[in-house]
Image (cartoon, rainbow, N blue to C red; front, side, top):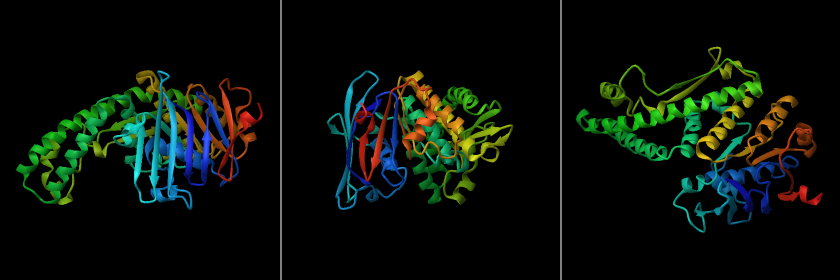
Length: 369
């Protein structure tokens, strides 16, 4: 999927923006700090995921003195079919989602049209924060690639919530047995989906990490959330007293993790912040390559403040690698010249340059043609 038209109204400091981005190529968004560059990326992200990557308070996304924001787009599918999509949220928190000129059933229906990946200053949380970030990384890919994933994930979430209620209420073992059986069934399916995804993804990550970082000793180990030499259902039943004391389920896919090491050392202790950013880029681009190969879907990449934490050769490698993915890329930088220095003459993809100033966006590509 790619964005053919983007219309933003009263989002942050963007009062009325109409954008026709480059379909499969590089869209450079330049402007001074505070001009609205990141807000433009945030609007695209919000359109695809229904939320911001900068705040959890929806009211902050609405421009001052406005009573709602709206983001509308024409999405072009891999079959070249145009689909209108949109999101609108008012100051009371009411959200309206639209897909193909009708109300969407929920954010997941909207998200299915827009596989969006963000690379920004917070991306290092994938390594430096807890396992939840790495589970979300894997599950994002499965959402777009596996038809059975979302059903399995929802069933697992439903069952574990009910089981946790029984544990908190200290219900007898006999009442938990049926829920434990059902939890184990869904857990095994979810675990198999994640394992299969990791096995397909990680060779691509290693290949791209070698290109960006000249790194050949990268290792990945998926941890399911329980001892692999034990039967999961047996663990649930034998751990009854311990879980009653804890008040929740202690083992399972909700505790899964992805260990990422170099020479046996966790990457967060081995790599600099800039190197971590490149490895994260390798992992995200690998997701895009796998999605294109296995599901014929293309990712939209959002890169906020490309120069941050990367030297010039690293920036050039990253932009060159992104441009080879033949998909839509949005990149922010303070100065247009910064991006031109990074790109040099090495990119053979369409490029558009947009300048943001005081919440208004100008297509410099059009103004110079």
